[in-house]
Image 1 (cartoon, rainbow over the protein chains, first blue to last red):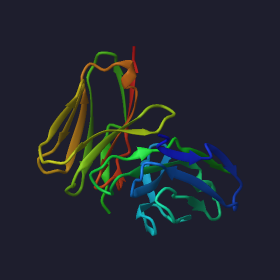
Image 2: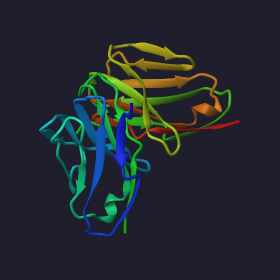
Image 3: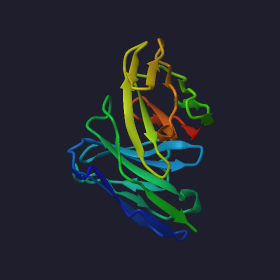
Length: 113
Length: 107
């Protein structure tokens, strides 16, 4: 059972470039979410989805897009990378939006120069 | 908007000492979850508290949810080097994470 799989593990982008961070889960979880983690800031929610075809914004959505065409996949798109987006990104899933634990992927360390 | 504040930000203890981290919310929470992140790793779920005044134990770890459901604490008795990491609380459906308490344990 793979759980939550994130790719890539590391990425370096130049300002203005775009890219997609991939996230897939094999637990048939309805809820999926993306967080960014910066030193001293904890985990901040970027976007989340409560099921296929449904997405919503979290605390820090600007500069990011998501889609949820299947239950398994929840990619995060950076439209035009900025140095402020240098961070560690975690994808997480849970059975339901409330009252169930989050299962995290191993993270993607992104550097924007 | 709603925020979950966590203190302290850092804690250095000698192995065998106790450790406590506190989580405070400006509004009532429906539930609170606790996670542990080892250095270089990803957060791992520890426990969820739902009821007012709830206390749960996992070996040396004791979790409490306040009577007003606005605060929570995690207490570790007799820390070990394996307890090293950052402890996060998360409120209201995982939407709001605290900033975490980084625990360092000196052997």
